[in-house]
Length: 310
Image (cartoon, rainbow, N blue to C red):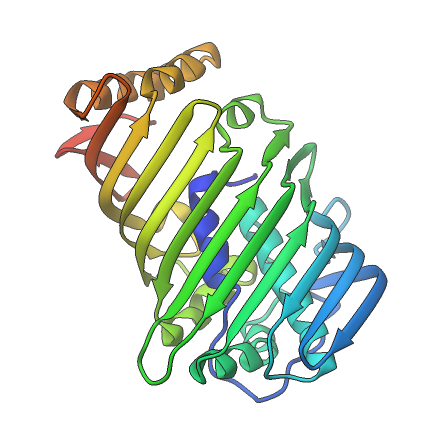
């Protein structure tokens, strides 16, 4: 099942990796198969055009296609950069479709992305971008015009700074989610480098529900038509979205429009919850509503009032 867009920050944090060997590892056939119409690599980056990837878990396994995938940043060799491109795409696909493949082992991720972690520890920056990526699982697909990830690090115990931008999002095969999916979103946050290895394995490999990675969300913005969401706060990300938690401050422009979208889609329970949220929210003007929010144990609490989303 394709996951909800609010968990997209999950895939961002998981594109990083933890301590391991100094060299990257090729994509294991038991995890996924990657192909490219053309590939160019150097110690400073790699670009794959007409890129395809699918999990190796059987017929109809989730797949990803992109017009191009590019990784840039110093710290590895040409083979390393190609391997990092594949590993990042595996994690992107796993996060988007909520698929865990036992063939994608923790050791593979730890080895493959070590050059990026070492570079971040030295204060370097990295960019990973997908042009026109489309993720397929069964009859469902989620697509973007572009998705860009920027990573920058610091020495010592400084956290990794992450920026994610996605544009032109759309979906087929799920009319409810398609009507709610933000068209554009941007997020800036920080993640402790030493905490990311278990989360990586939990996202695209064997799930580990006990993993909890702390994240500080500096800004979060999402837009769909006239509806705009902004927020900041903190979260603990896991391999299971329902086990994640978050708290912070959020504001939304044109909340009544979102309520009408949910009603039209037959989602009466979440529509009723948002009506309550609108009533208890702080209204800065006729179109803006703001809240202090908390998500824990699958329950959303708004201004200390739990909302019945399910």
